[in-house]
Image (cartoon, rainbow, N blue to C red; front, side, top):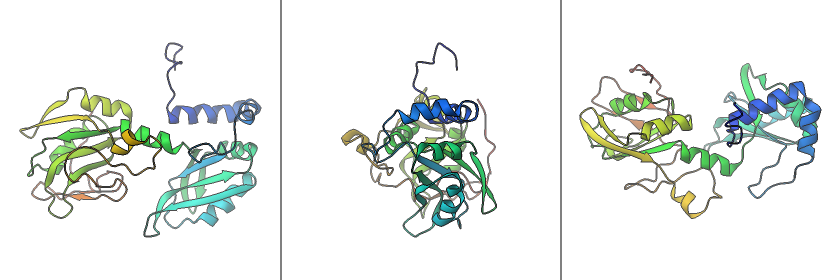
Length: 270
């Protein structure tokens, strides 16, 4: 990071890297800074003592998290996040009772839990999650009903890694509903995708733009389920959407995080 752009807002990953470096080299400095900040619950329900634990095994339980992280200090709560069917989403949260314990856990960001390497980071706020997702999400219009999902996915993968999507295809028939929604892993990829809004994909003229959730326009203090204000029938939920297509070179199923379960296409780079 140069002195010219140091005044710009930092991304969540940049903040985590800074925190990890400080906890190793100057743990006392970071502790003094955090101890001088407000540690009670903020308006969005989060505290400075909360950590995100990612890449968990499906079988890992909340009690396992509590047992592992209690080695760093007294724990207020430990939770593995699950869907409505009780299946783990493979991540969780740990809330410590004091900053010192949290800093001790951050000194060891990688842990082997139930035989799998996991990652520990500072938990970001709910509002930041929603804002971050909306900025990385693009909306593609004029998608013909017979558009091959594979061709569309291959084209937009050329701009970068797609974290979720495409949404907008009928679950059973694989036919397009006239639109598509993609969420890229980074803001830079999303910006590159919409830099030239008019696209020609497989002989079809499409238009892409930044997607704006209706909930963000009505109230910025919202939860993680986003409802977008574009096109008919746009009530597909991010967390449970699954798309399929037929009539292409192979049958592709897109997972909940938008990663193909098979890779019939070679990712392009720009």
